[in-house]
Amino acid sequence: SSDVCSSDLDHSTDEQEHIMTSNIGTWQTGSVDPSAVPTPFAVAFGNTLYYLYLDVNSHITAIWRDDHGWHCCTLDHGVSPTPSLAQGSPVAAVYKNELDQDELHVLYLDASSKISDVYLRGNTWQSVVVTNVAISNAPLATTSPWAAIVNNCLQAVFVTKDGKLGNFCRFNKDEKQLVAYQDLTQASNATDHPNGTAANVFHSGQSHNVYRNTDDQIADIWLPEGQANYQHALLSGPGGKSPSAHGPHASPVSVFYRDYYHNLYRDVNNKISDI
Image 1 (cartoon, rainbow, N blue to C red):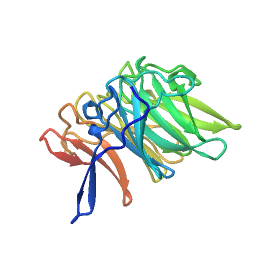
Image 2 (cartoon, rainbow, N blue to C red):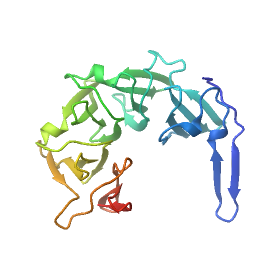
Image 3 (cartoon, rainbow, N blue to C red):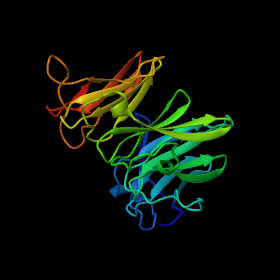
Image 4 (cartoon, helix red, strand yellow):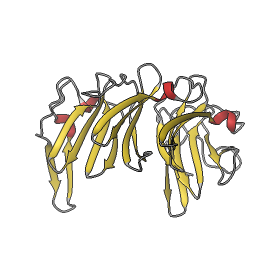
């Protein structure tokens, strides 16, 4: 695929609502077809807006806008070492490194079923296979990760090959960056297993990892503030709780808003529920 894209976007503007839409599927990107890819991810970093997606050639591609206009390239173009090919959609987070500088990290499920990270450090893109550099042995993954910043740690929560909820934590120590792995299912004594991607939200000093399990219920593994042991609870199900989840796209999405955290998902009634 080409590392240079046409800037001839299909723009349309609703003058009344002052909303501009851009059909990025019309970009000329060689063999890359943005209209045919799964879920894209948007992130703002500095003065730049990035649209990240898995392209049809198994590369992570970025379309971004800065003060000079629109640009496009695959994230393995000129990156050393060359990043692994992808099989899952990317997510991104801005993380403060050991030098107290912001870095943009793009994490994804790679072709070897490992979690890979392509990150912008200063003006240079670099890459690392997170699974390979963890302090303790880490399992292979079946889903793309969900990235979040929790207590100065860059977390990547994902479902493992053996059906558990795993978590990588990238942290700073002694002017270095280290990666630790934790089995959240084991740490919380959970007896259920995740089905699909997990979501993470941090509020009131607590980190919540919310997922749909194999019984189609919404579950939560969280670490209470100031405690060392994880907790587990079902958020949906019988007994007056919210309805169960349903369908192939029923994994929850979590957000913190006005002192509450909200978990939205597609329920068994084919409606959007919020816990």
